[in-house]
Length: 312
Image (cartoon, rainbow, N blue to C red):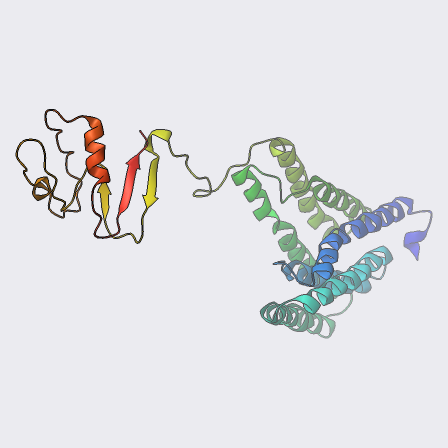
């Protein structure tokens, strides 16, 4: 084909480099699927990105066949179709019933309905250059949507100041891929190939700049994730005796007759069963702190109580 002539050396170079870098990007999810196979579980991953990638690759391959002078575009998208099909098959093999059902529905919607609809709507009513242009601009629209999808990751990085979910290597190779295919499209004078990669290049540069800004930043936790420390002066030591039915302070005496030195007055009558904590009783003249503690220790606990001691 003419694209391999020496009159088009840069087209060939950009196309080959674009294939090589794109293959590396296609292999990026490979560690994920190795872990899925070892765990025999999808571990919460979703198949949406791989089904969308398969749909995009099939659409671009259809466009490349119509164009008739882009064999390197056919080669990379053929590889993409194969690798994404393998990824989806592995996912379906280990997914739960609900995940399988959702994935199959998505495949039917994108491949069985949308792709088939585009194919049937363009292959028969149109022909020649018009058909190529229509399919090409449909590919542009789909690619813009695919390139715009990582914007949620960009917003997440800005919000959390964390680059955990935006590795630099992937952003770099996506940017490099966009550069190669932009050059390939410009040298072929094909705006349908060049334009989407302008957005891909801009988005890749934004991701790398954000990585440089936030790579050493302290991540911001979402509201409610960080527990507030309790000051030491507010710590209360709790001793549970039996079932928890009543709460009494140490200095409160409930329904226990205690005879003091002044005439045997029933001090327990001064305290009925109230849930509020009363003021501590005054220590009579002649009693010291040790005698009060002795009175507390002599209390007969008719019901299980919760004894609360302040650590102030």
